[in-house]
Length: 316
Image (cartoon, rainbow, N blue to C red; front, side, top):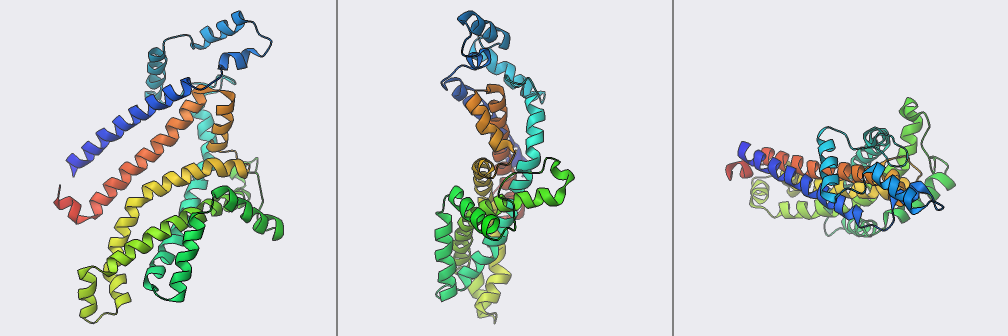
């Protein structure tokens, strides 16, 4: 197990280095010049060149990359080219919205997919099971923006239960208002991601029904459903853990769009604005943090799966 963990950790570190290099180089080929943005439309070429020199943008790309990645190791993601504020500080502030939104979305997705996915499999061949399966297929195909707009119309416009946009200026100093502001965006992401995960849970449950240990338990006197719940669901849980990494990545991608739609001051909304403004240090930091989070979650999911699955431990 230790050898496996160290190998996966080495791959994680390598993946982070590759991701940082890809992020850095990709941003350098985007059109536009941040020095021109800062200088203004009426600036002279000499003024633009002076700004480029002051910001270090005239240095060779390998030097700029090494400076940036060296700062990352010191927990310094640089400063915004437009405002001069530390990128790490702004990320920490915006994470107070994005992280709770992601956690709440994941909880909703699991609350939908786990029980309904198992029921859909147990009710296979019945009208209720078919209805659950068809509904999940339809919801999984719905664009998250369209789902958000429908929920806004229903819960914010028609019923008036939840706010359509915004986040309290006092933030989590007003926890009730902050939570109400996140419920509708989290429902939007959670329903769509939950529908996708429901299909996977149903498939894993149906596969477990056909396993020998479930049939043996049924032959010893348990009903099919009781045998599945007692002996099959633990293996379904292992399969769900494996796919959770992909679901979390989907939630992160969805949050970028949803924060724009619901006017939430999170990392996703900040990222879109910074890309438009060509604020490279901020965009680099935001993309690296989001990518690192996805890679680290995948690493932890692999370790947890290895720990709780005795078959994998024996094959080590």
